Image 1 (tube, rainbow, N blue to C red):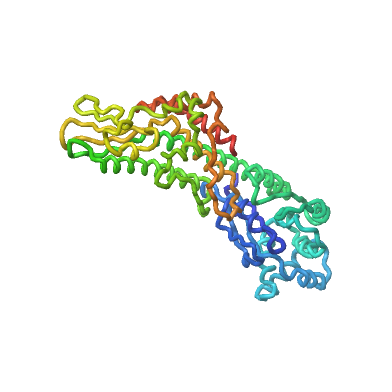
Image 2: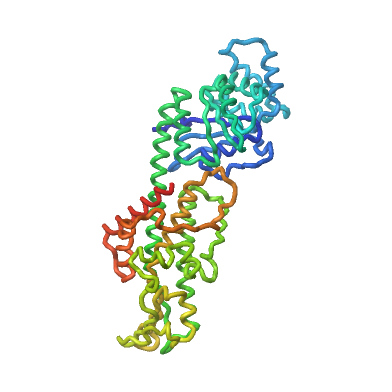
Length: 467
């Protein structure tokens, strides 16, 4: 394992300006704080970005400025007294010493220093642009450092000149690999690290350790995500809001207040889930734009959200519910052990309550108690068979989007297309396992531990299909 101070591998990501160096650092370091811009010269000084797992650095990447005066530097090196290959690194050190305070070579000094301090070289080119011989000047300077090196072909545009680039780069670098920091998934990250492990024998064990740590950490993130989705779904499905009533009967305003607070709490649960998932996948700076109606006045309880984010009414048959039987009874006013106004939601006996509750009577409202001053207006639990599948579908969509999102992406995450149906990843047998738990919770009972384990396994299987 990597446990000695500063014994972890270090890599300087270098190359021409505006070729995606910072994007590659951000993707490989799992760090969305790396400054990325389309303007050449965004990176002006070197900066180290260590990848930490449980507080331990497993490797460090240096984001560096692009070459600005490579031709003049190579001329200085070549005009210097001729040296054998084993002495060229000393000539690079002499250049750094002589020109450290010369603003003309500030960018080159910044990128060469970490290399001469032991960092391996990751040279980045945009292989969507034609190969140019002018790049050979930069590559020759890097060859003088004597450090282990590889080249990355980054396809920024639509054209593909990788074949030409590979022929040229192969003459200067030990390895040449394609890596798109914007589209890269976890497996691409691991594959690149496996290549890097071949650069230097001294790094092999450290990189292999890093790979194992990353795989373990990745699985931990998956397990934590699935656990949060399971807990939030069950918590939301079983949630009950209680509101004390002092008078003999509840007013229309009290029904509205209790209903709104119940709804707001469910929305709060989902927002907490989304924040936790952002933290798990280390996307703490992503700008999430959610244009879905979850947070508007209708929210989860509208016909629109039922059809877009969950199962359509026709599809409710998949869970054993008919289109006309989404939920249980309506408002149950239970006073002194008796039940009154059964079905009053439909008959309008309690004026205006139907509009407050939501379409098709999604959740129960009860007024319970024996004496004045001790009555409670109880809202919930949610009786809609569709409701947990809406939450699961939304959560899986959100979590898989973030899990698959590269840290090099700087665009806002727009959730304006949440047309995610649970049957994409959940088959009929899996649905039966989920419904065993849902039906128990709707009856306000506690599911057995083995059922909850089975429930989480179904969510885990579904999530893995998406990432």
